[in-house]
Length: 300
Image (cartoon, rainbow, N blue to C red):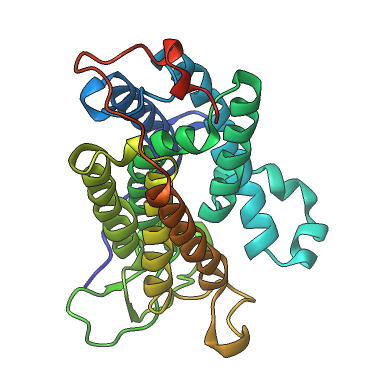
């Protein structure tokens, strides 16, 4: 299947360019912010514990999250996926975020650090903050993987004869590189697999957890579901995703994505087990209470 000839640059105004990749990050952060705020405002979701913090505090937290996503994602890519020799030869490349190269696992670490600092400064329960942030994360991930597809990067392994496979080569890629790095072979569109499973399907699973099962009343369970299923989906998709250059000969046929995702599966199982065995507080009055007026909104 021919790869669509979509320009990675949405708008070019002289030297200033707005790229789909950057727009995906901005839209993901803004939409995730509004979604998380909606969760906090929906009193029907908090039947045994009040909302973990206020919508106004979410307005402050989103700045910390944005820094964690971008800073952690970039540093994660440099540490996990970029050969040390390449970084040492061009140290300033670390800061050229607009050239692409972001790591999901690095972003998670960055956001986790941001939430830890925010929880400490505001004396809030870290696990319950994560239970609000986690359901919003797949929104940005979905948009980011779609942008990866538009850029023709992070392609999958060769798959001759695959009906929905793509040859990741078009005029834009030839103009940028002078050739097509993915070659003229049919490959798995692994970016779209990740957008579907780690983005859309994971969002729906977490939507059930928040609105169907109302698991926000159990500390850390929603966060556990997020890291568990992301880890499972990522490990599965890594089997058809082309390994990054220089990381294609890891032991036992593993990839860096598999190695980084395996602890997520174990950590997710632990958070779910821990949260489900913790006693559930008595039900709140039907009208609910304000988060900052109920003792359960503070850390245990």
